[in-house]
Structures are given as C-alpha cells and as structure tokens.
Length: 361
Image 1 (cartoon, helix red, strand yellow):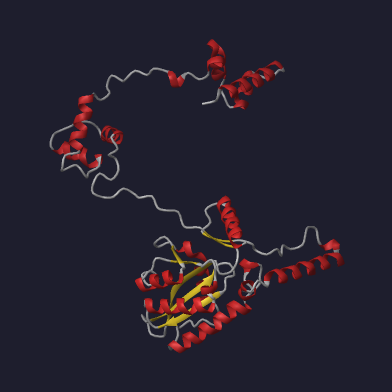
Image 2: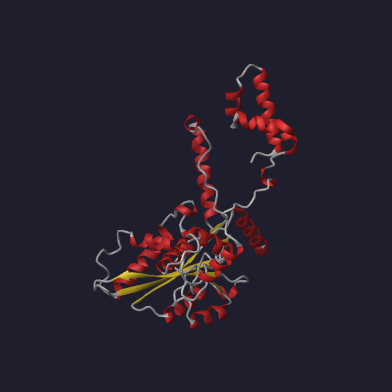
C-alpha cells in the first residue's frame, strides 16, 4: 500500500503534468497507478483519510468451517494413528473409511492455526545454530589455528597424519608434526613443543587456539594441557570447514605443491622430510598473498612494516621518474592491520580490534 504522504506527492505530480497538457492515462501509468486508483484517491476525501482497506469489515463466508468442524479436525488429526501424519495422508485414509470431514487445505489451515503443521511426530524441531565465533588478531601470538590432515602413502588405505598449528596474524606455521597414527598424545606433544618455542609462559595474554570438532583435538588430555597452559580452546561448527578456513587453505597449498608426491609417501621419514622442506619454504621463502606478499616469518617478526614501507618508497620514486605512466596512485603497500577469523560484520570486527589494541597497550 502507498502511504498517504506518497499519495499526495503522486497526485500533485499527475495534476501538474495533466495541466501542462499531458494525457491523464499515460501520466498515471508513468506514476505506477491506474486512472481508477487516482479517482478513488481523490473521491470522498481519500487523500485525507488514507487507505481504508485494512479497516474494512469482511464478513465470514457462508461456507466457512464451523467451530465444531474445526474441533473435529483437530481431534482426528491428533488421534494416535494420525498424530505423526500430514494432512496429505490423513484425508485419503479417512476417505478409505468412507469419512469426509474437510479438504487437505482445510486440515492444513486448522493445524497451522494451532502450530501443528511442522514435526507432528517425534522428530525434533530445527534448533537455531550458534553463529561462528569471531576471532580478531592484531599481532602475533593472539590467535592460533590448528588442524590435522591425512597424507597418502604408497599403500592404499594407509595414511600418515600431519598435525599443524598456524598463527592467524602472521600465517606462520608455529608447530607441526607428522605421525603414522591419529592419537591425542601426538596433539599434546605438539602443543607442548609449540608453547615452549613461542614462549607462551611469558605471554601476558595467552593465545586462543581454534580448531575443528575432531575427537583428537577435543580429547581429555588435550583439554587438560590447554587448561594448564591457560590457552582458551575454540571450536568450529561440526562439518563446516569454512570456520577454520586459513588452515584449510594452507593444507591445499601444501598438497598442490610440485614436491607433494602424487603416489604417496613411501616411508614415515620421507613424509617428515617433505614436512621440513615445506614448512621452511612456507615460512621463510613463500610471499603470502594475504599479507601483502611478505613471508610469514617476516610478518611474525614484525619486519613487514619496514619492508612494505621500502616498497612504497620504491614505487614513489618510479612514479617520479615516469609520471605519465601512472594514471592513479601507486600500488597499496600498507600493512594488513587486522586479521579476522569468521567475521560477523564490519562493526564487530573493528570493535573487537580496538578492544584488543587497548588491552595490548
């Protein structure tokens, strides 16, 4: 429905166009209404009272269901034999017994009015899922992401297991191990080594460790170690890999490298040697696109600002030498200030980032 103020505006515009020589019908069509609508608006004070259709009294149809019929529909639909059946099955079953009470649509309307159209049996109603937990990192050591992935071997059906922890802010692999079995003891060992190498004991604010819902990463001994280290665990939604997207992307990078064996690893030592080479390449040599093409090791050591500033100055000098080649500004080499895992909205991201910066200060 068109609001009263908008009606006044449309009528004024149509009358002005009509007074200027325009035909009434094309003017109304241009405004998106019909001539009959215009006549109804201007007749009997229509522009003073607004739309009166919502206030109209609509009589009950003569063939409408009576209260007794509605009660009978509800009683039959809730009989034990029909309690878990939809109207599409109830009505034919009654017809086989020579009984007709109402149509399927009437059954549907009555059940809907009483909130019985969904999950009429023992099935649970859909439960609202929680939103993914948003984590914001503005410096190394604030948020870690970890996961486990399968590494193929030369024997079909046999796998090695890569356990890996990545710093969200710098993308650096801060801990990794490869084993021939999936065991929570390996995850505990990796956590101990990573906490020691990253100096968790000396951190005022301990990192958050985000992972998936795998049983290995949620084992009792893993949770006990996290509690002892004062590291807060965080978990993804079940079967939702996007909640841990940074690690999943890293695994894809690893498995699509030319050095990754297409036929699998022959021995566990071969897999570990590949792991050492890959982690060194990823941390020290790989210029990561998500952090302005500096290496994760440089960003983890907070060397990226100086590197990016030097690149910016190089581009400024190049533009001074050949200004005609630059129609716009130079390439953006500003450092990535905030990295967000599972962002909810821009306002929440900036709010959390400011809170973290204040705590760090």
